[in-house]
Image (tube, rainbow, N blue to C red; front, side):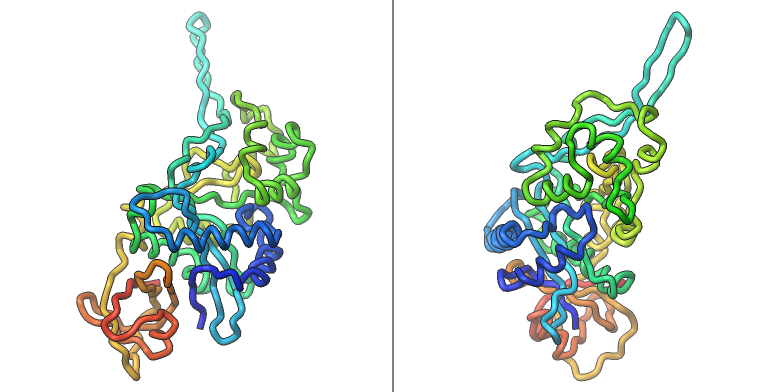
Length: 338
């Protein structure tokens, strides 16, 4: 059975292997043991902190195979993007120029550096083993974060965003970066993303141009990257789009990948999830697949299970499910159909 749980310091060696296997552009998962160690400690502190509103907390989850004790994925929630330093993006909007004398008005799309998205809750760090792509466990890894937000709403913003990794080729070349960022930093795209993961995007973003960049002046290959999803990032995009997230006018300043946005009040797994009491049973007459989680903070757990569920009634769980969720008879769980 696979279970999603908070990361632990003993996970460090396996977590670094996940980082090595992750997609270029997942900057929140650097292949650096000391950096990952600090992230784990920060996450542990976040889970243990008593807070009444969203702050700098970072909640890091791992997906573990209980039979083998092997980690097969990870994902994060940053409670407040831009809490300690600006969260930079590129705003893609039309710039309109006009001449009364010539009776001409013309709109041109332009990219402007901004930190408009600072203050929102940020989903990041999504990575899952290739063998589990397009399975219910991808849904678990992504959507269980939303169930966690539902259970602990005061810790998060009223809006949630995520940056989907933009297009780069098999050699790690990003046409968007080569046309824009590379002119301001003598760095290849892969190295720029690595530095962002080890430090932060701020030191690079602050050296980017603060004046509008007119999209028609970029090479066609770079223009085609604006809002384009990397093929390996499509599943992460699709899952959240089904949750009610939508693209907006913001893109990643390094690879041009899209930003997804949703109000917490419109996210399916938050607004449509149910709570119910547990009853341990010997036999389950399953009628559908569900995501299940306990509502704990420090001991949060989530799994995928085949269940029979009727709103307003107890939920029958096997002893194995109860053990995985760290619940007993009468415990409260949260669930939503897959």
